[in-house]
Every structure is written in C-alpha cells, then in structure tokens.
Picture 1: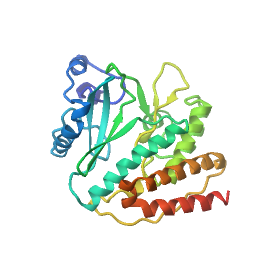
Picture 2: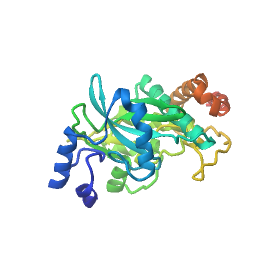
Picture 3: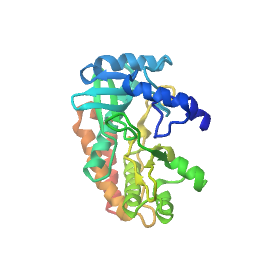
Picture 4: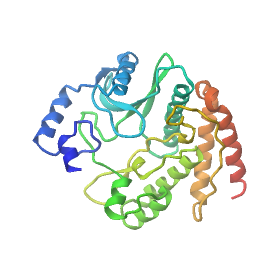
Length: 300
C-alpha cells in the first residue's frame, strides 16, 4: 500500500499524499491537470479519451475497478470539478447497447436515492452518437481541487473485522455498534443495500461503499456510487442474455428498511420504463421487477 501511494498519481482516491515525488506531482496537476476539458468539449473529447483507455493510454488516469473508466477535470461555468467517467463502447452491438442502458440506470439510481435523503454521487450523461458516458463528480475532491479523506468498507473490514465478504446491512449493525457509523448512517447503509438488491445490483461488495474520513468517530457515510442493475451486464465475452428476476425477501429485523427500499426500487424501475433509451433495452425486465417487488411487499 505504501509503495502504491509513493508511486501513485494525483488521481488516487482519498486525501493521502505520501512522499516528495507524489506531492510534486499532485501540486503540478492541481494547476495543470492533464485531463482538463471544457464542459462544451466533453462530447468531442470523451470518445477519444475512451479509446486511449482501451489502448492503455489514459489521458489522466484510469481508476481501479472492473469497468473501464477515466478521470476528467471539467472546466464549467461555476468553476472546475473532478469527475470519474465510465463509458460504453462506441460500437453498435448488443453489449455496447446494454452498457449504454446500464450507465443511464446508474444515473437514475443516484437520483432516486438523493430524492429520498440518501447522498449519492452527482452524475450526468454525456452522449456522442450512440456512445454514452456517465460522468460522476468526485466526492473525495473539493471545488478547488483539494482532497477529502475516504476509506472503503473493504479497508475498514480488513483492518478491524476480517469478514472479507458480508452483506452491507449486516455489516451496518457492527459498524453502528462499534461507533463507526451513527444510527442514521447505519440505517442509510441498510436501506441502500436493500435498494441495490431490489434493482438487481449483484455487485455490492465492500469496496463499493465507503466512509468520509474524519478525526473522530462516528464517520459519515460517503455518497453512494456504482449503484446499477449489474445482474444485467453483458458477460466478459460480450454476450447479452435474458435473466430471471428473483425478488429477495427481507431478512430478519430488516422489514422496515426493505419496505423503504421497495418503494424506492419501484420508483427506479418506473423511471427506467419512462426513459425510451433504457426501456428499449431492459423494459421487459423492469416491468417484471415491479410486479415481483409488489407481490413480495404484499407478503411482509
């Protein structure tokens, strides 16, 4: 970890800058970021940057994770902001169309959660032809390109618990008990988990949720990110197949959080059906999901 921080670039997550070389790189890129782009130029620049990432030559940095992405420093009317940009392929094939729909779903999921009081990464869609880019503002950066501390639940778990894998709702109990999270943020984590489960997000590992670092506990839950129906993603070979939806029932003691999430999930799937660009791709799945959630909600 220390070696990675020493050799890392200025786009690493969180606020740690270790060593003189890393500090020099960070200070240099604050004034002259290599991934700077004007708002009006994003649709023109992003396709070329996506191609660079796929060739192994990212414009600024290619952050970690399963899906290809790049960073951007956007020069907007209200000042600069840092972003992470995911993208679909520029090809017109089933896998590219599916990823384009899923990126739109991620933007919708964040909006649904934010409207219900759960912080989510601010995101917007940028398009160029049929290629879709999901631009998410970085919550570990300030408007002045400064840094905010961040730690993933995976890191907290590795340092203090050792679960390796545990559902977010169950981990929330331990984090609240041990003072890492307030009661409100623990409840938000439980609700977020069940929302994800009900929108078919099968990728809710501990690296996909985190906390804002501070000098004292409890820590604040970071905004939600990577929230989308990952069950519907293409295979690693680019194959798109139909999937059956099985609504997860609430676990013991989780009924209230589950019902909150069910209402939010129905709102999400309704939004999917209302967006022609998404409904054309996964509308049938969305309609079945709404029926199944309502059927399950009537039982509990």
